[in-house]
Length: 228
Image 1: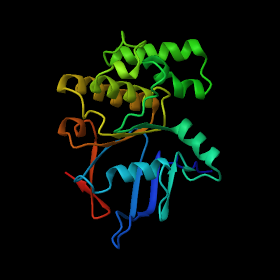
Image 2 (image 1 turned 180 degrees about the vertical axis):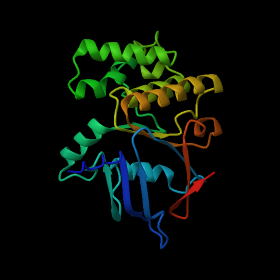
Image 3 (image 1 turned 60 degrees about the vertical axis):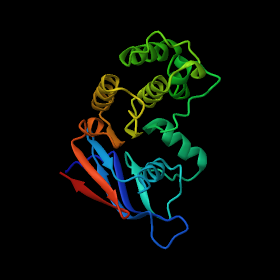
Image 4 (image 1 turned 180 degrees about the horizontal axis):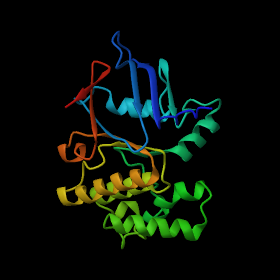
């Protein structure tokens, strides 16, 4: 009896999205990313990279097509089911960061862990470990308004990977970081993706960031093409 192959972490089939124009921003797009893969997504500003990430996460509705993460459809039967899938399987580093202003740094990072039922002591240990690895070990009690742009970006990054998701979507995750700090953050992204047996899709204009990916794709005209 044959054993079925494991589902890819991400499968996109025939995905399309248009915004008030005759030409789709995303046009019948197909993509598969397997376990352990790190993929860089490149393209000109405004070509649809961030929109594609939002479609993958189920934060925007496509006009056509299907997205699955770990074999589960992102557009689930109900909003609650879709939110639970994102909580379990997805980590998202947004360009706008979206830290909760009324929570301190450690609490922000702990949110996805506690929502998933991690014991408080285990969550606190994980948070301290990750903040230390991005040079923020002494900033756990700081409020978001007290942080620099680079510090906020690092907090957003570790929050996205804290629960070891199957898929990490990272939208320009090093845009506010100096080269040395970016190197440290990118190494963490790569190592945590590998440790979780998950996958990383990284939107970037940075050659330094793209260098951690084994595969590079360019989005142009609504389609993906491989980049050497």
